[in-house]
Length: 629
Image 1 (cartoon, helix red, strand yellow):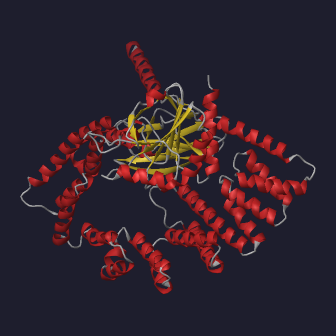
Image 2 (tube, helix red, strand yellow; image 1 turned 135 degrees about the vertical axis):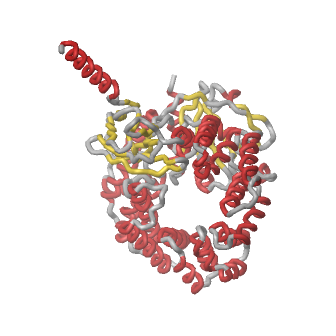
Image 3 (cartoon, rainbow, N blue to C red; image 1 turned 120 degrees about the horizontal axis):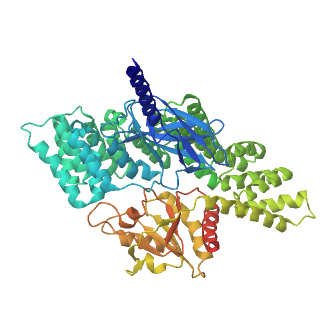
């Protein structure tokens, strides 16, 4: 009995120790503490924010195979709890801090998901590695490796061949990121599998179509689609083949004939929104009012209708023409957005509910800015102010802020204009023109005051605030070396510029936001043209074609920009561009700032729409590096 008791005690102690060992331990990364280093599906997973700024929201990607779906994370008292379903392989978190997305300085907050028994999904490693080079790269994660992703995908397909349908397209895509030879081998593998079959069905032809599309083999792709259209006329691919020729048409007459011939196919296709909008725009420009209205009414998506109305109204507002018609269109754009804000019927899968609401709010603010300008030009200043206040929102757009102060001054609301201006200038969200309006209002409110001294003090406060924010976002990563030819055919090597601050601006001639940011970048180039310690390199990337060099040269010459442009070479053994790949560039415009010691210190993606704000940010980055020992 005594021995039995001892064994029982030992068993209980052993079981308790095992339980204790299996208890998940919190994991702290930066300012965040997570419940553990893995997420157990179906069980609550807590996150705590330990920073000083306070936090309200964020989101995480639920990764399923090669797809990522965003889900909101809402904080209360700096704490949040989420529960992940058992179909998820990976969860990757992003947090909204200081009007920007916090991603652990490119390293991310990426967690594997396990079930109650500690097991993962069959393709969990493939999902994890592919996420890092795909969706994660879009959110500026720098830890992805195409070779690791390809190896993980191929290991998965060896173990679980039934997952081939899920991974085939991105198996080819990932192989292309590794090398041309590898991509050819993967392509041949899929083609040979199909060719070995005695008779092909729709799925086989779809596989061939996908392979040739991924390999950009247009001739074979078109040939396979022609076969699909003939053999399987009711398939989605046949439908798409019917619609595709529309995009090669040039004249409105050709487009309308095509639309009338294939109307049902077009309206059922994924391109319906684009095609009907295109026909509406073409007819509007041709002053075919009745036809414009007909196509406008056919546009499937409310958001597309609102965007079209706003673009037309803004163009008229800028020209000061047809203000009554433009105001009516603008007002309708606001009504449409408000309807969608209430119904939320068009949320795309790449937005979480909170992200979609924020997107609609941004659209509403932008369209309210248009409507306010129209009201102002029509002499309805008080009404214009009411809508411009909506357009301003949190005050992140310096241009919107400028117009609000302008309208307040015009309405002789000088004290309010002064107070609003002080807020925007101190926060670094003011344009030069806003400051001019402020001077006028200040003179009315305080005629004996020293307005220049007040502005100087506020600008210094804005500079200190901006430098503090930039310092938090500083990176300390090795800047990959590269050599590229400039527009004169001369080699430019990054390492030869060590000791200088180098601003790399990744852009393309087709990139609208890139081009929109160039006036601000020209101001920056001009400001530092006599400073030998600062170099700007404009890296043309994500472009190809036999005439690429000539097209870039012509664009720069015609625009009269004083830019030192280098051409990002295409990879010899891959489908990407060498410099963009080295710097993990997934979207443009992207600015990368390399410090004098050769480290990558800043990476800034996108364009806010304000050239003054862009100049201030570039200036702040340069000044911060100059002040760093």
